[in-house]
Image 1 (cartoon, rainbow, N blue to C red):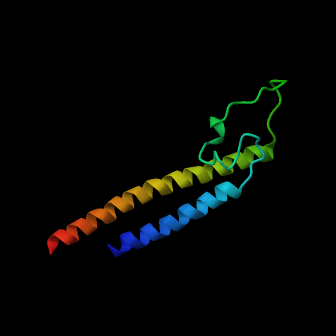
Image 2 (cartoon, rainbow, N blue to C red):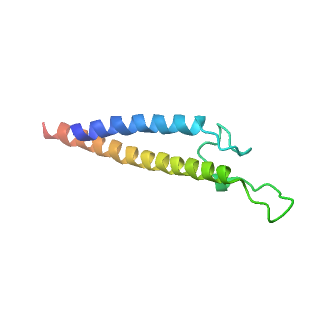
Image 3 (tube, one colour):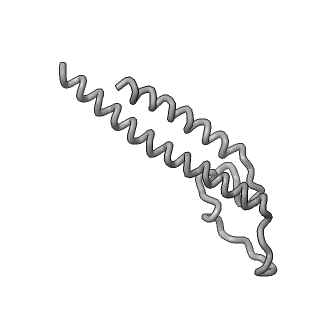
Length: 99
């Protein structure tokens, strides 16, 4: 029960940290704002391009990949928090019923 509580605290702090990193990081894309931090970069509607051979800048692509990776970590963190919270609640109910 103690390990579950410590893991809950640890992952809640990492969730806050990942959220702050997502808000503060800027990819350079015009669609990327603070309000849609949870959306992956490929969820945005593509901009019209003049020439089909025009590619995005390499640093923009690198920043988008980095931000998408942080988003995946954020989502995994939320799933782990959900699991740990349910586990902690179950342990509390088991120990309270044992007395």
